[in-house]
Amino acid sequence: EQLVESGGGLVQAGGSLRLSCASSGRTFSTYAMAWFRQAPGKEREFVSAIRWSDGITYYADSVKGRFTISRDNAKNTVYLQMNSLKPEDTAVYSCASGYGSSLYGLRATARYNYWGQGTQVTVSS
Image (cartoon, rainbow, N blue to C red; front, side, top):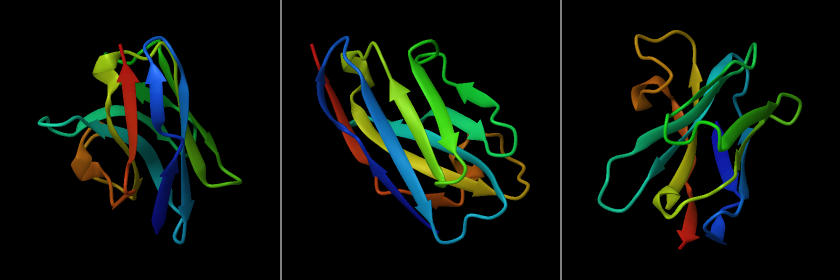
């Protein structure tokens, strides 16, 4: 499976961006898709996830109320609408897909089988 992100860029604080992640190849039996981010010098952190079957969503506390994850099943695409962006949101954002069962929860990187290459989001103050 291949995951290709798009939509990153440079935006001023308070602005908005929408990230997209298109999945191709193996797309059946997707359990969940998620967004993670990694800022320079920091570990990769969970941002948001969506369960493919029922659309239930999960968010990190730092983005709750500002970011919205959604999916388009027909297009095998997941989106991340980011509003009220802050300089601390600056990072490389990567999408990931997970299949089958796992001992790991949806907030863990180990839950996911495939990753995209990432897209840079820079928020200026």
